[in-house]
Length: 293
Image 1 (cartoon, helix red, strand yellow):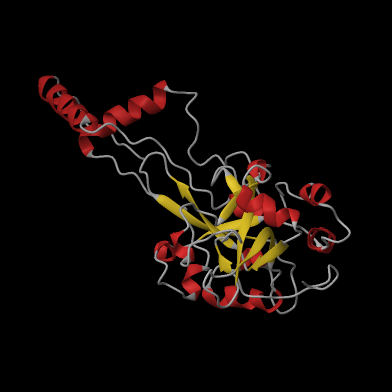
Image 2: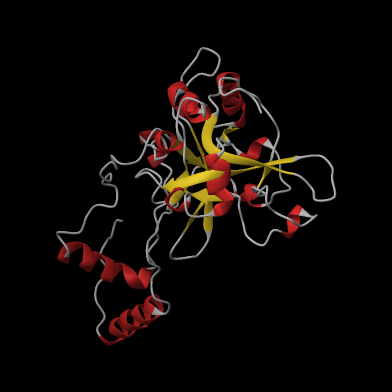
């Protein structure tokens, strides 16, 4: 019943409970309402009714997590996603927050993420306190996040967008829905897998981790001849140290953490090659030549 120009901060339950729900226990709701797809928002009664009543809200958070699935290993790498932060004297540069000590400095002037949501008020049939609950509207991911997950929250970027979304008295539903779209003004970094357990609540859940793992390949004596032959017979082979082309569609600071995967070598290939080289060596001895890798 607040005026449309008034802003109220209130704790709400995540997972919208429709006002028309008749059960006495809200946990008995048979469908998931934590998220609301923007493309079907006007088709589902659970979201269309409160939206028509002007029950629009903004969900604030430091950021959110999403998991990128590796196609080769099926493992999932968690990422922390948030607004790009402005460098201040207290916070320093977000780009060099490579330790827990440096990372804690950025929280002094942290810009909270503002996500568009819908809320509703549910009253127990037998009487009792009113339960406020909400859902977060989701859209297709922006280009920068598409490699991590196909969906993202509808982020309201800036004070003007936030004000229009909340002003249900002056801004109609149709006008407000024009604010619901992906935004590229987002950044992210990989975090430790400790965040996979919801019981963990420590700074380690937010601290950046480095996914780049450098491995030095060492050839066995029996395979050095083949490696040398491959090096001389493959003039077009790319140097492994050649830097890759920068991805312009991903935030510059975040793109360095994107996990690159390669197809695993077929099992048994190295063993067969080693046997072939050993047999050839026994049949046709050759003089040893110095070799440098």
